[in-house]
Image 1: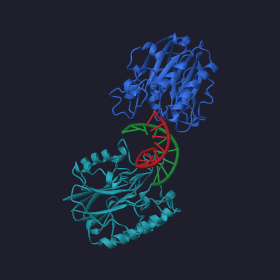
Image 2: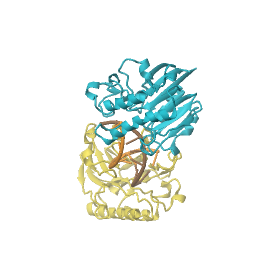
Image 3: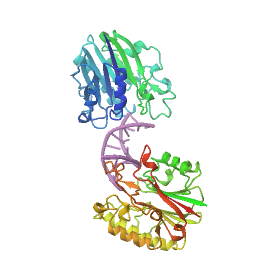
Length: 259
Length: 259
DNA sequence: GGCTCGTCGG
DNA sequence: CCGACGAGCC
């Protein structure tokens, strides 16, 4: 059977709930990981998703961050604590088991600027993911790591790699720590199916007409261990949210598996 | 020739600039007085109105209040200072001469509550208008006084006069000071043409479904001295802004003159 | 309770 | 450019 997974930085689930429900009804994914839900758990619209056949797990906070996992299948929450590298109370990591697959949804800190203390925090945060994976899983298990990584891994993942090398989101230090986590046992599932560049999932709102000029970044990812990556059939970007009335600065990243 | 005058509490000219431009192109008034522009003079969109053939005078401040006068004809600013009764820096009075008519545009303080010090301030503010008129004009001249008066003068100007008598906006003390200014030499031009009640220009956001249930107030007015009132041919409420995408809590009040 | 502004964050 | 929020007003 096929298993369709997706990730989307929704930038407020309350502002884009209708968009999301329409998208779910159309796309029928088996798994959706959301970042930046920006809603406290008490206000998460559980019932709206139940009404269309989706179960939800969520970890939110006030105003910022917030992650959620949606599926029409049973969801079992697993360890969702990064440990000391994470600011306490920051809702950036949520993990679950669904259909025998371990799913880890992260909203990695954006990092602000390489000269900022927040950048150090981002590096530590990413580095801590390796310990997290070691603590909870083995590379032989089917583990999916999805989310907004806030890092474009390769030059082909960014519209102007020469100019932007060294900027936050495309910085050698970020590449180093991310490679360190990848070595634990991950493959970039999107890259496996789309070896060519020019596929983006994020356009900075602050860049004037950045979408029309396609000044994007591929910072949302679907990574998997061999056990699951070997079963991936395709992976693609779904630009639907950019065409709608209330566009997001991110798009959906998707992958399909034979499980 | 005819002269069409209008007044509108726009509650942010930046939020409703498009609405206003469309309305001007359709309605082609010779004069429009705006209240609650909520914009500092440096940010007033002068050019957008020039582009459609309208000259502007404006007096704004940060965040609150702000008045403006628009006309396709020449506008000459005249004394726009109420004096000591006004809080310094509060942009609530703007006056001009256009086509030989003196135009006084006011955004009278709302008054909050009859028990509040702001209510006393409102009464003093209104009372000071009589001195202002005496200082600058004579009752024999054509003087138009337009704006958001924040007072419904008569029982027929409010949907539930029995219950609301004594509330802010329909209080005997307000009626007394307003009558005192009226005695200087004004007629209520709207009332001259619409002697029946039930015409409102304002619906409180806080009243549930107040618009649909027509729980309104007539607090926006066009008053004139005899010289101009005698030339008025009609006066009416234009509810257009309530039917649009971004409704306002006020509507346009209008009058037409033969001059 | 609805609305706008200014601020902060991305 | 677009979210959430808090303040102030009505």
